[in-house]
Length: 163
Image 1 (cartoon, helix red, strand yellow):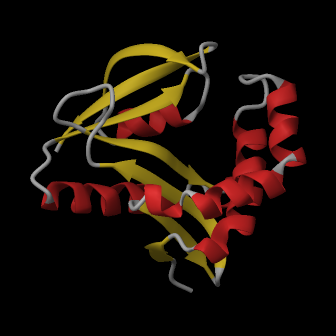
Image 2 (cartoon, rainbow, N blue to C red; image 1 turned 90 degrees about the horizontal axis):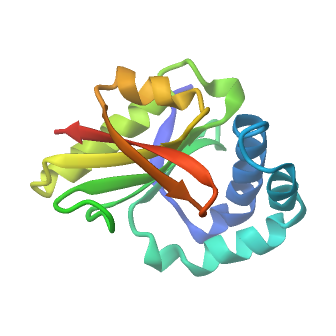
């Protein structure tokens, strides 16, 4: 029962949209507005359609499966919009029931391996303030370099990794 990391496919869109809604509701309850979280659950079909339609715009989006079930994912870009000469992880999530088993680190290391192959030496990750994953990023060696507003409302802590 080994986990598999593979490129996201259009066929993943429905299960991925459902997984995103579930994990955001589990992770961000009390951090993000309840209406927003409820909207993720109520609008899974629209989210799935967006995921299916933007697959070519997100080439570095990988799914982690266990027994053919999505248990996590990572999405990164090789160039950050906000930070010069740095890759950026935009999304790194593990389903709640699978956290604490090394899967997040597995996805992180997978991304770092691909990023460093391209000669990139810096990586940025943002994490909403109040999210327990802030500790995960610090544990991986991320250095807090500041914060900014996410969706003009929520504080997002920014971590820099020297690769």
